Length: 99
Image 1: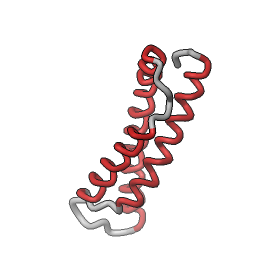
Image 2: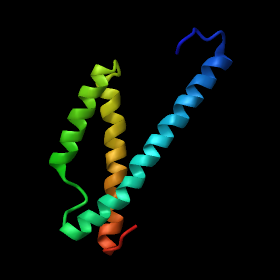
Image 3: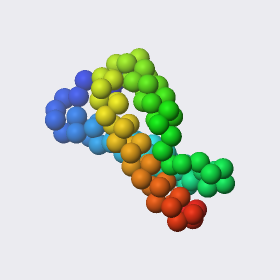
Image 4: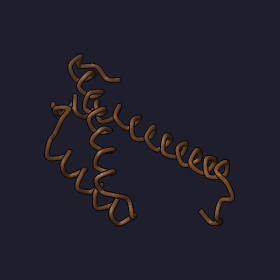
């Protein structure tokens, strides 16, 4: 924020804008999953690759710390996002169908 908000209404507007931006970025990440499913189908890979999950979480924790975000918060959010992503992939991989 470049200037100090004057009241709660202004703060809520800032938070709402940030939320819109976050949802757009999550949407971009989710849309990428369709390509992930296609590659995993073609290459016979499972939805869950535990080593990759831990690699992503470690990277996110480091990025969070560098950005001044509590790493535990970032890890919690990403583990939920990754869990949802794995379930999405499993649904398509079980059917052998591309999204």
